[in-house]
Figure 1: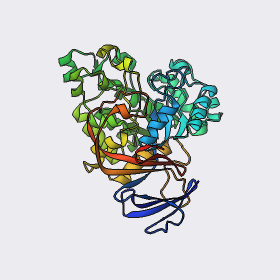
Figure 2 (figure 1 turned 60 degrees about the vertical axis):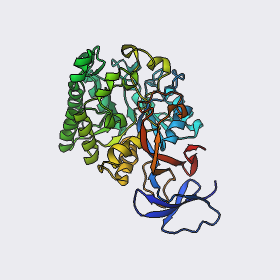
Figure 3 (figure 1 turned 120 degrees about the horizontal axis):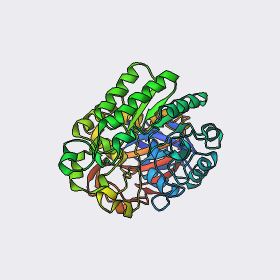
Figure 4 (figure 1 turned 30 degrees about the horizontal axis):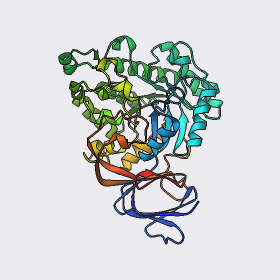
Length: 428
């Protein structure tokens, strides 16, 4: 592998520096480095970040390759600046055994565009009745540390307690999809003024908040780790903030779309805006941004949820829930958090690389940009502005809520252990 010199990049948004990559490692970071025999990338005005880490990606394989595969999903991840993703367990068959998680892990290795860390199911078949093979999945080649029934809530308090107790043995974490099922039967969108006016079944905030309250108490009771997936309401923020004030081992994520979009968009009845949890109010959006800024919410996770066109291009009630997000995540964070002054680029690196890597116990990612560290890096042009065109996505699916919208920033290069997976904004 040849040497690569990134010249004049603003490391974490700071002063311009040169970064020399030699093989899979950062060899040197200095104000001026001789190029020698290295390939030079002129990065004047660009931001150099550690490779982004996504705690919440749906790659759909095995079973729903019509919407995404590990290969197409990791290509999309690389385009978005990600060098590692956590693949959720709601595949067909469900990733509830060592065999399935090892299959996903192996497919990630073969793709070569980013590292894929499988997430194991908490319960068999995501049915919420019996614990899955948590220990076997952890002991497998995939080394699973994060477990989630995402797409469904572990609503049985006893099952949730047992899962939290079980993963303590190997420092695992349970990632909860907080949705009380009885409170969301027939729900189609956020419960509020807009749902009342449109006559659509309301999805109350308390359906999320009640589960989060229960689970932070359970985690504290057994002394275990719980991670809250796609937190979406102002009330949820306050519960997590309270739990953290107690010193409990609780972390939380927010999606890019919940930082930008509101339930007012549902007035169009466009199913591209149908998502779980639903788009909330402007008050919720502002609370989420503030919580991400002050660290109450630990990280941004995409909840990349690809669907084939026939599952979204239909009437609202019949449409599947979910949005693709890997290729637009960093741009949305730049618009909602950086350009509003809530986060600087060093804090973006913290929320989109350092913290998710720590939460997922992921080795080799979310590391400082310094000599001797793995060369998992993302180079971003913050001055770029472009209109989102899903026709050019690397993902197999096109269900983005940002079609035709202008967003800032573009990933120009992504490096996975020193190998360029994206060059000039295109797959290498």
